[in-house]
Length: 212
Image (cartoon, rainbow, N blue to C red; front, side, top):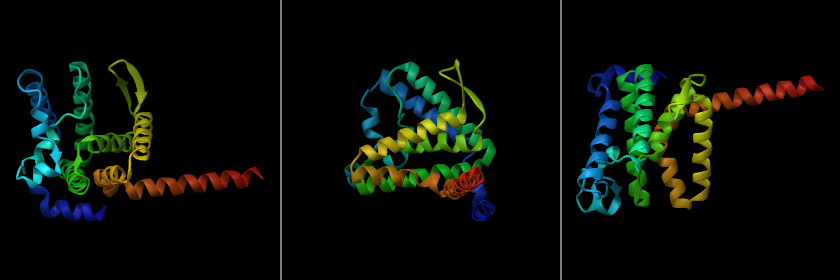
């Protein structure tokens, strides 16, 4: 991606090293506060258009620290570990600047979705990290729930299917929210996905012609 290389040469020094550790660490702090100090803390941190217009601009950043998967401690630990694992792999593959840019694009997409629809969260941003990981490392095997061996590409297919079903089940404003929140993934991978689809289509056409 030539445009990414040009951006990195010009602005690479402004990136935040180990960004995923910072994000996961922030989610751990927020979850601990929610669990032991103030269970309503996330209401003051998440993206909300009315709150933003009322001057609570810190939400433009703090929504990144609101854990999408909270619930039980076990659920949170698994989700936080997997987010760190996926994010660290992407950071190592892309470098700090490109990973920062990917997060920034998803962040801006979520903010735009909030301004248009009224609210947004980190669901699509975190999902886009998993999808990116599945595209880069399709045959890597991970232990789901720490004991079920599974190739990453199947996790990606499952996550993508869940996103599509969720997208189809909401109204038009919800659909717009989902699309805007995935802008980072589209920016990085739309050309790759389109190229893969075209290649698959051509292979299928070739196979059908040879069967005749």
